[in-house]
Picture (cartoon, rainbow, N blue to C red):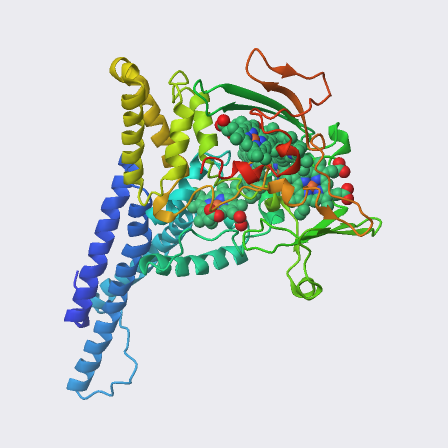
Length: 501
Ligand code: HEC
Ligand code: HEC
Ligand code: HEC
Ligand code: HEC
Ligand code: HEC
Ligand code: HEC
């Protein structure tokens, strides 16, 4: 078993050592990951992206060295170096070389097929997208895991089907890797995503507009910032579609998606929170209505050149997977779920005071401040609780820290304020960006803010003392604390977005 003489030169030997080492490490890792179930995105990147590079460089070195030596030998015996070599299978060295070459090539082809398949899967995996650039993607990855889409992969929304978008995503991904390495990425990552694939080609693969529900019940629980953390319940029937599913989306909230409806708008800010101009076209009849904000109409010159965006799923469901909850909401949830004890007096007010007043730079300082300030508050104001029921205080600290970690990310400046949610109208204007009673057509028609148009309130108030409506009738909204008629005139978000500042 002898190899051709030309093989024995520094370059080819180095190449051979390089590829055999790469292959050996690969085989070792393969056994490790396959039989012992260890690994993850990092080992995957090593196995299917870095090792192959060394393998291929090594494999290229081998023939380069051999050709150089062959030419040198030819020159030494005065042969024309450009003359073709005769492949003589009677020479045992040639036979060994051919067998090594043929089987080597076959093995290489099989390995590259497996390798590229694996590399494809790794770069498409949630782990790769969500954890490799840990700090940068932490906010989106964490909120994703707590969303209804925790089992939908990142790429199903961000890339979707088809080779075109796959290539596009890998090209922009390459730039993103560069910007992470060079620390050039913006904080927070800007939203809305400019080149997001249209909802039609992503969301509608799983949620098709013909199959929406007619209504949905929402049971909300709030706790007021008073001494007893008074519970306040609200039950709503959301009118998602027409009363009966046979009418599909001819009425109700998903009417905006009706195939005969086209709604366009001009946004006057990056985040699309202010929409001064809205056009509704009935595609069946051709009727067109333009609604403009009567207080702040756009100049004609601006209207002529501004981008007119067609409304789709994302204009309401803009955070289906990365919802950064406002502090009052994640604290309410923690009290409702029992992580933060409701019997701890004033706990809602205390947590609000901390979460809204402090500007945290890192998660670690936030964890410390939360612990110290809650603990100090009870030490100073409720010494008997501090002495006898410290476990309640401990639970409240843990619950607040947990809520913070899942919704506020100081390192990336990602939180509820950076990423507004367009559904609803309590903390952000959401539906009230259009439905605020201030958008008027030239005939005086307004986009309605009628409290019973989108939902009916079925129950409201403190448990056991709550007001309950009749079937299919809506109660008149009662604001949990007395603010007179302010909720009728102002938009809810005017107080609720920064309620505790
Ligand atoms: C259910 C669909 C869906 C899934 C699954 C999903 N995203 Fe998103 N993602 C969106 C939408 C929609 C936006 C924002 C759209 C907008 O406002 O323009 C977004 C925005 C983002 C942004 C921009 C910053 C921001 O918060 O607006 C990043 C980064 C991101 N996603 C990363 C991820 C990662 C990483 C995963 C997987 C761990 C993932 N996404 C899974 C739908 C999804
Ligand atoms: C791969 C399939 C898939 C894709 C793509 C997808 N979803 Fe979903 N969606 C789901 C599943 C599964 C659920 C959970 C259903 C459940 O909880 O019963 C869900 C739930 C939802 C809900 C209900 C949430 C709740 O709180 O109950 C909304 C709203 C939603 N998706 C909107 C979207 C939007 C907007 C997009 C596009 C950005 C999208 N989905 C893309 C599969 C998908
Ligand atoms: C005008 C705003 C708006 C638009 C546009 C919109 N939705 Fe919704 N959607 C809502 C509201 C409001 C709810 C009720 C749930 C809630 O309050 O969060 C809802 C509920 C849902 C649900 C859960 C209930 C169900 O029927 O399964 C899904 C899924 C959903 N939407 C998907 C979509 C998709 C996909 C699109 C785009 C084709 C879309 N929505 C467009 C406002 C909207
Ligand atoms: C970009 C502007 C815009 C946004 C944002 C918007 N809507 Fe609308 N909506 C309209 C227009 C325009 C109409 C039609 C008004 C008319 O009758 O001329 C409408 C009509 C409706 C109707 C009545 C449909 C019917 O005929 O039964 C409902 C219900 C509704 N919207 C709910 C919502 C909800 C809920 C949200 C927030 C999740 C929302 N809308 C956000 C523009 C908007
Ligand atoms: C254009 C549609 C629309 C109109 C008009 C509207 N709402 Fe709502 N409202 C919503 C949606 C959508 C939600 C659910 C938000 C969510 O998914 O979290 C909501 C939620 C609520 C909630 C529950 C908030 C919570 O988190 O507990 C209350 C209370 C409420 N609305 C009161 C009102 C009152 C009062 C009015 C009249 C001034 C009104 N709504 C008008 C769409 C509307
Ligand atoms: C003038 C300011 C103001 C306006 C406008 C306003 N609210 Fe409030 N709201 C408050 C205050 C203050 C509280 C008490 C906060 C607490 O005790 O936790 C509150 C509490 C609430 C709560 C109890 C849960 C919580 O977040 O603490 C709900 C629900 C609520 N408001 C709904 C609404 C709705 C819906 C609208 C619009 C239709 C609205 N509010 C408009 C000031 C306002």
